[in-house]
Length: 294
Image (cartoon, rainbow, N blue to C red; front, side):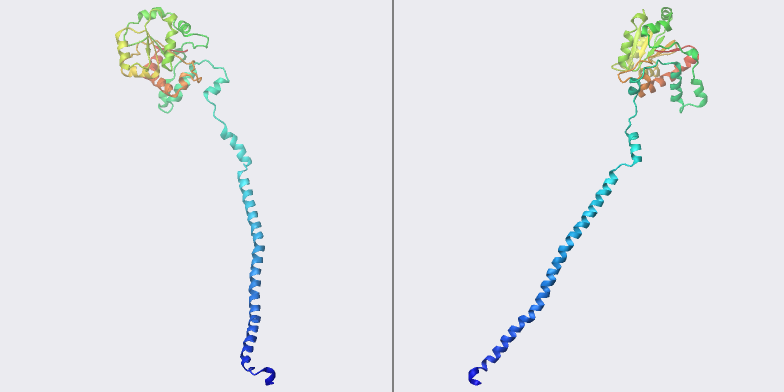
């Protein structure tokens, strides 16, 4: 046996054990490595299978959100019924009058205007005192007259009246209109009526109050044509006296480019009603002043 194994058989005993051990080690490592690869591959497979499911859930949630947003955007039946009401614009004076024929003013229109304005400023007894009788009014313009023809109708004895007027800082006939341009237009229309009477324009544009006071004091003025604001200022400064006033003509029916009357402009309306309250209404109640709506 010693010959078959060789003289150095004993030297290879340890090596053989080592080689066997080395051969056995990989056999032991293989089972430990395989589960790792299986677990890794298993995890990968799970992640691959889980991604489509999550994506589907996300898509479903996004679709639900889109449906909710669309339902919120859709107007309800109640909203449909309310939206047209909000979109409707209020009709202006121009819109109303453009589709209808203008009606001439009447004394009742002035009475209602005065009552509405002073309703929260005066007591019940004072409001009754502001009411004017029908005898305080002259015939109203039926939209067929020019200013001269209308004045000839309501003042048939004008030549005699103007001769009797001798007081300074006063007028016999006062015409109230809405603007300076309208004042000039009305003065031009007075040519066939005024005769020898002196006419004075009484508005605020480019003319100081002091200058108009001097003109009224210098000579006798028969007719005054002006705006409510300036007329009120002249009365307050005692530049204009209404004691000699006999006729008050209101440029009631005339309309501007926006189809507004004098009393449709808020600023002019307030000034006009304040002017009436400066002693003119008292003169009307006493029968000294007659009002005409032109």
